[in-house]
Amino acid sequence: MNASVIFRWKGLGKEQFQGEGVTRDMSVSGVFVLTAACPPIDSVVHAEVAFPRSDGDSKVEMKSEMRVMRVESDMANDRRSGFSAVGKGFALRAIPKQGSQSATDPAKETQGAE
Image (cartoon, rainbow, N blue to C red; front, side):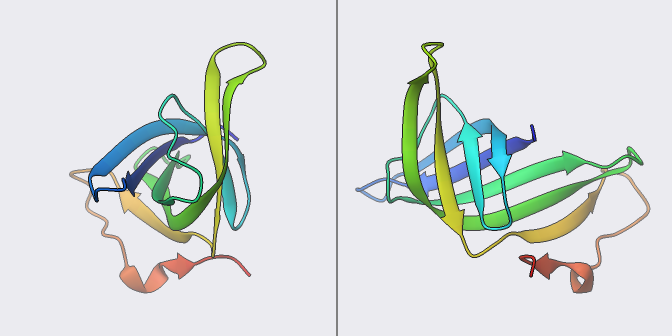
């Protein structure tokens, strides 16, 4: 699976950091993100994964708070890096394109997958 990811975390001095990447693997409660900016092991990241929908008028967004379990650098000697993180699951919601007549129904948002 190759989806866009934006993630944020706090540093030791409470400064805010943000990174972008793409998913390599993803499960109900975890993700591996390929990125140049890896958060430290054991930090808490707020991740947002976006998937375009086939209708072209909206996208599906999954959000989660996760803990970084592993960081890998220079994978396969091609200077890529990434990290794995796990949490309690993803909150899911559909987001209409700007200017679209449809609105997101918060009652249809779901937390995690059973």
